[in-house]
Image (cartoon, rainbow, N blue to C red; front, side):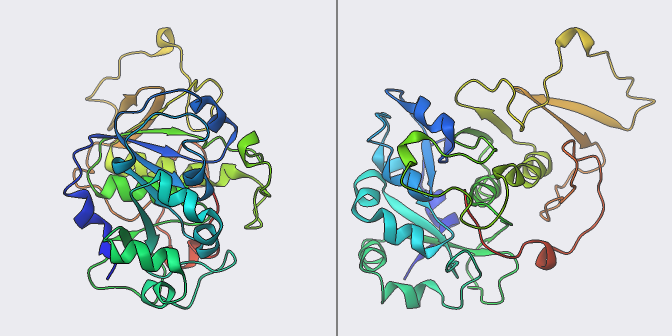
Length: 285
């Protein structure tokens, strides 16, 4: 039986986590060392050792929303990662699937093996009609990175680094055999509004592992332009985490677990929305 991811995370000692995607900055992992936990998205899980990253395999988890990513990484995934995280109902061909993990375990040898070793972990994806009563609710609209950030935030991870989450429409050269944006979206920039919303709601630190200059996740404000904010006249405070400046409502002491879906990059719009209607369709990374 697959294990709820929150149960596994209770026994993981890593305080800092790295999310690895397939974007161009993935190549900058060459010969680097990471001493914390890792969530490698989709095919990135199969290339971690090839690129020369030094890390603890025991603290590395692969994450995939689409069942095809598991089939296509296979033995490389087993060699590079301790286990796999998937939604209780994985996507099939970039669309919501109809079968839960118990059914897929019977069809895919890799999942059967991982499950037999207690190395297969799951969560419920928001918007799914088929949920497991023990599964944690995790949100993702278009991209696996959204689910990874939200999952770690809900497991009370406070510091998350990332690499290979670059936006645009290209993969790193290590993934030249794959076609970017197979889910039909026009750009990987679509992952950033919901990632920023998670950072804001859970007040977590999100930082790039490599140079963040010009990265669409971050607002660069020269320090000399930041003036003191009178607390008696402005009902908000500015919280700066590394290179990211996020606006947080002081009255929001208990973060709402429903993510904001504001379309603007600064997340200033706090309108309500329908998660089931918004978060449909396939997920890429």
